[in-house]
Image (tube, rainbow, N blue to C red; front, side, top):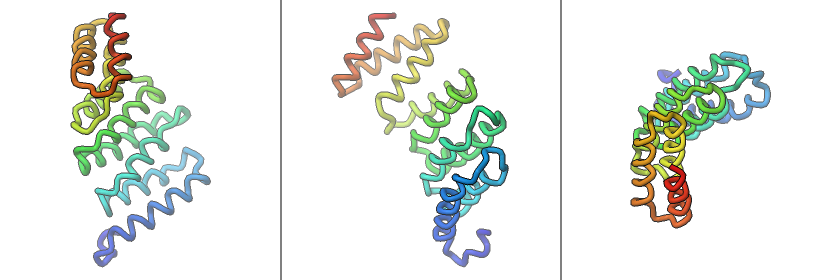
Length: 168
C-alpha cells in the first residue's frame, strides 16, 4: 500500500485510522484482519501515536488469548517508533496484568514505561506495587518507594508513598 500513496502516506494512514475506528462496532473480537489496520497505519505513519494506544487498549480480550501477542507486536512497533512515549508500554503492562495475568510481562512493560523521563509518578507507583507482590523484590520495592518520595513534587503522591513505606 505504501508504494501507491504517491507521497501521501499520512493521508492514507488517517483513512485507515478512521476506517478502523468505524469497524470497531462490527468487530467480533475474533476477526484476524481488524488488528491489521493498525499494522498498516504503523507502516504508513509510524509517528501517529493514537493507533498504538487504541490497539493496545482494544485488541486484547480474555476470550481470545492470542490477542495479547498481536497487541504486543503493535505496541513494540509503537515503542520503537516513539521511544520517549511511556503510555504505550504502560497500557500494554495493564493488559498483561488484567487480560494475561502475567506478572513477568507486566513487569517487563512497566519497567520500560517507568524508564521514560516523561512518565508520571503513578507509573512508578504502579511498578512499585507490582514489585511488592513478590516477596523477593521487597528491597527493590522499598527503594523505589523511597525514590518516588524523594523525587515527587506532588503532595498527594508523597502522602500515599509515606503510607506504603510505613506498611513495609
